[in-house]
Image 1 (cartoon, rainbow, N blue to C red):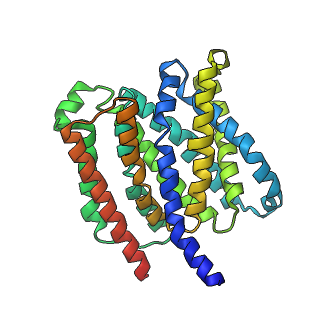
Image 2: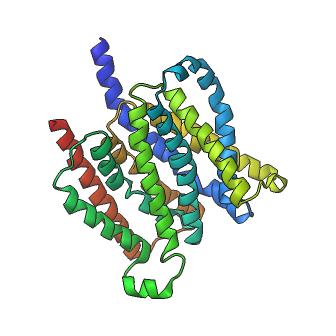
Image 3: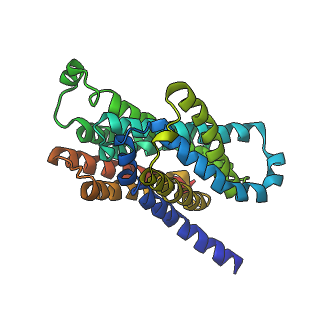
Length: 313
């Protein structure tokens, strides 16, 4: 009976990652009014992490005895997923979308390069095997990402214009993808020996501490600008697309290979593209759609090949 329950748990786990990805897709319609209303990227993220840290306290208190068991290496991992993957990753992703004229769709599609980084990091840190097909599909995915962002424009003309969307927007979005890829690998490693509530809670706490410094140093605490509508949107972003989504995500990730998790997360850009088109009027050109199809197809094939390789190990 216990074996059967374990098998069912492992079968359901990847779909929990899908559910979390779909919840993340609802972020942009609530976040954009905050940004266009004058709130800073870092300050919004600061509020999110403050709310989520408070929501995490009951779980952290229940597992307070586990703090004595955390090694130095694990503490560093918790700092990384909090300050790096959660806080800094969010800032890079949102700022990248803002620079690209609030185009969260392009930023999200570029974020799907994450499996390339996640698979590479899994090879280094989790000793998973890198397949020969990686070198076939990874360049195709990068080509698709280029079309999504720049269309048919040549690299030379883009460099000559020096516009923000040509350089900084995609650069920031890909930087976020790199940090999140590391967060997937490190988070999965931590949950081999630490509880879900501890990992998720400390992610928010360390992210909050980092953002306290970031907002103090580079932005300002804009509490005076907070309206009822702004507080509502922040609460929705923090609790639904943040706290609840991450609890579901980590519950699924605990029993899912890092490479499989990246595959199941493909539901996020597809859902987000539809949501942003309906609610924000963000539409892609035919070339960008073709690039998105190439990107997602290559990433899917790359991840499936990697999964099959791991099953043979």
